[in-house]
Length: 91
Length: 219
Image: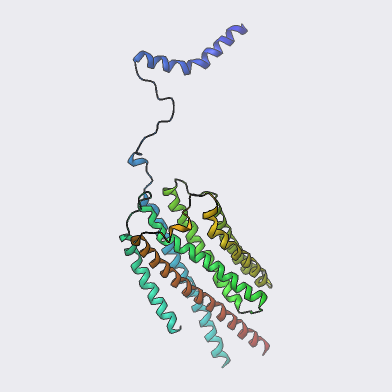
């Protein structure tokens, strides 16, 4: 009984690996390559496009620059308005 | 606003308006292609990042050892600019690296020490915002430590193995790439001086305001 179970287990484990190769051999198809295969030029769809990266880089700097200039101008305006009001109140 | 500031602001605005056309006219690089054009804003941002760190360090030295309390305004201004230009450098660099190196980031000496410098000035800003009394001197110590990091960042690409281009790239650039680069360096330097002066002025005015409120309370 134990022996039969062991044989069944081995068959179940090997079958998924062995059957497709047997089927391929029967149909006369070539085996898949055993390792990674290098290519000279990557297909166009596989290459990283430069334009979005370039746009993001310049966009980030422009937004950051304008944002910071606006923030300084707003803070300076607020403090100077308060200063003028306080000085006029004192005088 | 002084006359010199108005002239500088007009000049900087004009240069930043012309810069995209000059960058567009620059030739492609043989191995990196179009993406290398990030360099024209990345490199000047990195230089201003280091300049801001040195400015903060020098002003901190004046505050701590020469007892000039107004130097604190310049430390605050320069530290904020170090965070701004540091963010520009650390965001544009990985965008360039993704295409040129195939990865967003590598933990080499240049990139890691630049990130450290950025974090030092973020820490400085947080310390000044939430640190309360005495945080000016503690912050100045931190800014001095940041300045000490600058020479290490600059030479790191020449001594340790890295993907990052070495410092010898800039003086050996072909003329058609060098002209737009130096144009952008001048534009960023002008922007840096303008922002530094404006930010320091904000601190001077805040000090005046505080003094007026204190005088009002005394009456």
